[in-house]
Length: 292
Length: 154
Image (tube, rainbow over all chains, first blue to last red; front, side):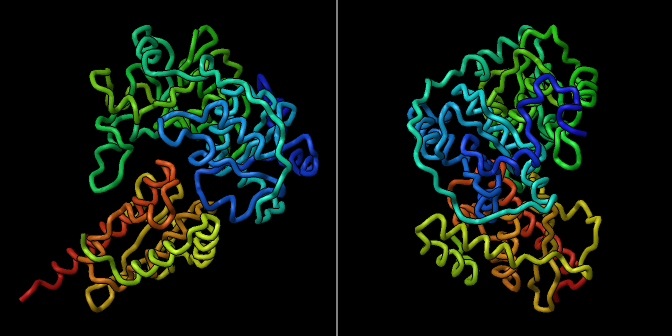
């Protein structure tokens, strides 16, 4: 089913692999690969794509935070992009890291960003070209705005108030993480949290339920069944907060709710369980709760 | 700290000589290209869940095949076709730990993955890769215990 036929609130934010193939040489477009696997880009990428690595490019090296205005400006200049460039993000594992990078770029107001539907796997499965070697682009003269966390990020105190008010929360982790079972697998590395479970009142919708087997996003009808009927979200919800472990998987759900289903106010709690599960005195629920 | 198996130490020493990040990445990609799937004589799909690496997004599985000398030969599957890092680690672990005494295998610290891939691993990726080391060790321990039951000392 074509993107424009799936009933999305903002279909223009998704582009197909055909569209990307047609715009590989378009100077107003910059293709950006963002993966969880650090070897993947170098092993072969969409021709002309640059790599934006979450650890090296998007994170503050000292504080647990994202890059600041100067860092973002340097990044955009390095990849030869400016405010008029259409940035197309794609990556591995159903585009989960690509939506994370997309979300960070939204903190700097990059409204021309898009996601390549189906990600890296779909491109490869269609037999399209993957190349090695890093392309070089002339540095742009981009001047970055300041980072604006006010619309898209939720911090700890906001989440606490959100819980007290009984507002909508989506935990996008696996059922084993949500229930707290996963944390108690001895002899294996865990999420780095002292306590397992979930934030009280959160519904569990594992993030990958939003994608089909080929990695493309499910049609709006299917997403509505999952998020509105099963998880109980509705348009009257004043604010929806999504979270996972460090905000990477929940950025995928943030994207789905905001752009595909058209929820007006969705925030990513990037502190997520690595923060909440280590916070002194915050409430925690265990067990299956509201699994959807 | 216990000494690492000689082959593993040699691999780590080689990687440490690569100061340029892109050289390290290229070496690891070349290693991943040598990945071979678990032989059907050991396991066939669908694989038993007991061999799955917990928390690994690349869907890796590990088997320990007993040799006649008390050591094991290690086999892997990586179901995610984009799991390049998992494939590279599988080759390294298989090449450097197969044949090593179980006690030496058990002493390999899971965070050896940082010495292989560098410190820039995301939390999720490091959990999965360290999980592969842990799964190999737990399979070794399990197989060793079963062998000891079958062949008690004395």
